Length: 446
Ligand code: HEM
Image (cartoon, rainbow, N blue to C red; front, side, top):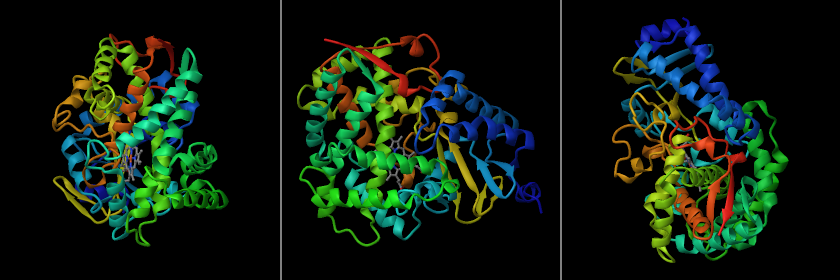
């Protein structure tokens, strides 16, 4: 029986071959091309220039008009692939982790195994439970501000100061990300790891291999060296760092702390992108600069944990330009939908930009709308899911905005900033589908 015949038997909608090819060309290929684990700056630049992300959103909108609410099956030979098109289905799928909708999928496994084979994201029950608990406890997933935030702020402030002094009159991505990763290594591993750029460089090579998933040979040697170096840093358990907390915790064989921490080091890269883009929004959108500066001044020395507006700007940067655009799940059993049955081992794609930028349902889709995040349920029941949601939500969904907003405060508290090439983000025009963080530059004054 062909995939099409099976889908018809199971009762779910199925896309035509032409529409399937269009989804591959407009949604899947550009997402893979940008680099899933390690961005390729040239492709990111191209995506902004050609507005590829908006084209992807338009493609999925056209499928919704044609096929209804889905889920829509794509007839790809040798694979059961579904795309989610309705908001209710997003919530249902994401609440259904880890079973029947497993966060660990074939491709994620192939990609992440290059450097963190035991990370929670690609683990199945029962190991997943302990690994997820480790992440939730250490990153304090449920707390709006991490209990160690004041200590983190000291590291962050000194690095921001040094970054600005060295930058002179212009701040660019290279200066920003170098300082950001110094902060990240200090927060996670302690001050002794501040200048271990080689650790981050080894990880970058492994992430580059991970972009190719199964197609790239295993870089066993680098992975071994990377994990040994990480273990050494963790063993010092420097006071005031997350490493100290890890050592104090009763870890078991299943915990695999170095794999979890490898993921943290990797995932702070998108955290830096989101922060730098938020800075660009603040610098270019009419009254955002004023609101952010007022909040930073009012927060003063002690209040930097609570800067709801700056925090909202980071979340808004992630709504406009999600750094994890494709949230993937795989069914662990046959799943009954209102319209029919979805087979076990079906790959389920939730493409976040389709929801975040759907102007037919979200009037603010292409505008800078930080106020969306200042209400208790951002967007109501409409899915705004930069960190996913449900049992598989990113355990750093609070920590990333906390560190990001403290970094922005550290910059705005010391300098007046202006975005160079400000016409990329004019407030009277729809915002672009992608924003190339690598070429953003700010002039610094004051
Ligand atoms: C802008 C920054 C970040 C964004 C947008 C983000 C987003 C996400 C998303 C969407 C997922 C779910 C992925 C999936 O289901 O396939 C996820 C998972 C995860 N994230 Fe993040 N993340 C960010 C940064 C971080 C950081 C800095 C850390 C650690 C310090 C982190 C730790 C994790 C972990 C451990 C998981 C797996 C959770 C699980 O196994 O259930 N993330 N993240």
